Amino acid sequence: MSELPVVVIGAGPQGLAAAAHLVERDVDVVVVERGEGPAAAVSEWGHVRLFSAWPELTDAAARRVLEPTGWTAQISGYPTGAEWVSGYLAPLAGALGERVRYGATVTGISRQGRDKVVDGGRKGQPFVVHMVDQDGVESRLIARAVIDASGTWGSPNPAGADGFPALGESGASTSISYRIPDDVSALAGSHVVVVGAGHSATHAVLRLSELARRSPGTRVTWMLRRGSAANVFGGGTGDELPERAALGSRARKVIDAGLVDLVTGFRVAEFRRDGGALTVVADDGREVSGVAHVFALTGFRPDTEMLRELRIDLDPALDAVAGIASEIDPNIHSCGSVGATGARELAQPEQGFFIVGVKSYGRAPTFLAMTGHEQVRSVVAHLAGDQEAAARNELVLPGTGVCGGSGGFDDSAGSCCAAPAALQIGLRPVTVG
Image (cartoon, rainbow, N blue to C red):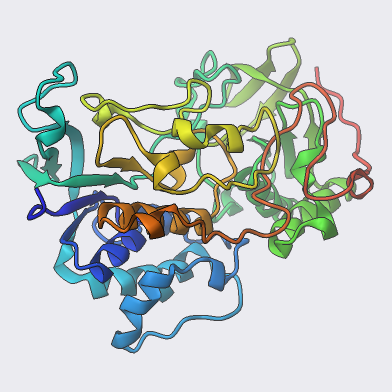
């Protein structure tokens, strides 16, 4: 199978970086992207500024592929998603040329002539990547190995706190969004709810708080499932990613200023239509009424439907690659050292198949781009037969790790990014019901 290409699914940050590493090692590669251009998912949140700086957002092999084209790396600053695409990802895709194929959706991956059940001769068979284009025309790619870097952007979590859409959520879909808003001016003077505790929710709250500042009568309610807001505000000056810390600090200020109402322990169970508005009901019976729009920003989950004929090992709680799950589990810690980032930890029972990037983290909220770059470096080294390079860990994270999400669910556990003293905040009490 050495004459066959490695197929990479997804022309996003990790997929393109994987392709760059494969090109450097003279391994034939085909990148399959469902969008019409590179980093289509990133482009959809192009208005959002990243909290990782430029040097943390570019891969070493990708830089080496780009430099002969006259491209120059940015050495400082924090790009928006759109700037990340235009300043790095699109030029990288351009340098990779015809290796990147657009408008092709992968519908399944299998072993040639073997369904999931068959053992006999399985490892000796190449992979078959099943695809369909935008006109519905089906095609196949035969591959020696497959790297799934398709991400999770297409599978947002619902607002419902038990993992399924809340009662009435589907029926209220015209009033519920699952993406960070850009232009919110149409919501001026109305009551807007944000559900979620991660960085996406924080971005949305800050954008809406500016609307509330400009337009009196605009009400913003921020609903947290957890009993404490401690982790939402991060580690302040103790966080070694300053822009990540700034998000939490700004969120705390708009709450203390009265621009945003914060409600904790609110686990959405139902949406009720009340005339033209929504009433959001928690599982404990509390209600928030008169809501014009809801931004449900509760994270993402991987879509594994296309992997149904492969033998894969995912953590039963996180849907993450089993080999890295213990280090990123938000039930255990809100930051991870993430030492397990290489080919050995990402290996699947299906030899030659790897899940990388944010999809490898499943539902865990702690992924950083630099982690994905280390993943693909190691995986490609393994596929190229350089096991010494594959075994090395070249990841250098900020000392405060990959903070995001966790601690206890019902208690007031704090963030690992700073000492508890940095998290003592004053919240304006809110009464609902």
